[in-house]
Length: 74
Image 1 (cartoon, rainbow, N blue to C red):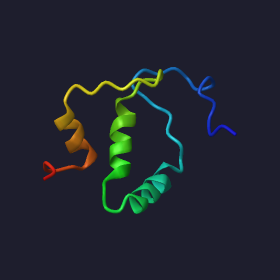
Image 2: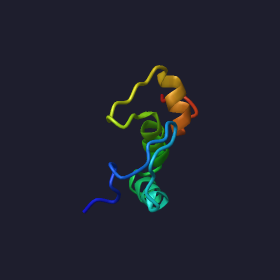
Image 3: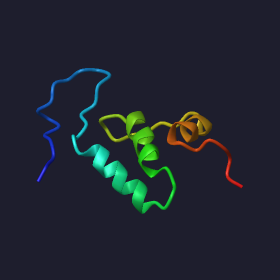
Image 4: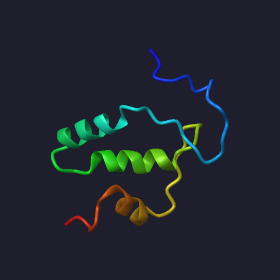
């Protein structure tokens, strides 16, 4: 079962299709990750992705900040 048909959506540059239940999945991911910002990391990666499924990370420090990691591990 598909959540949405990617071929049926209109083509608009700069917009993505987001399922309505995504916030609930985020809560579940964060609960299961034991304190790590899993949902914000997932979203940061998703929002960098293209429809072809490719992700380009030019600056890992920026991605870490966007994902909720405020300081270096150590």
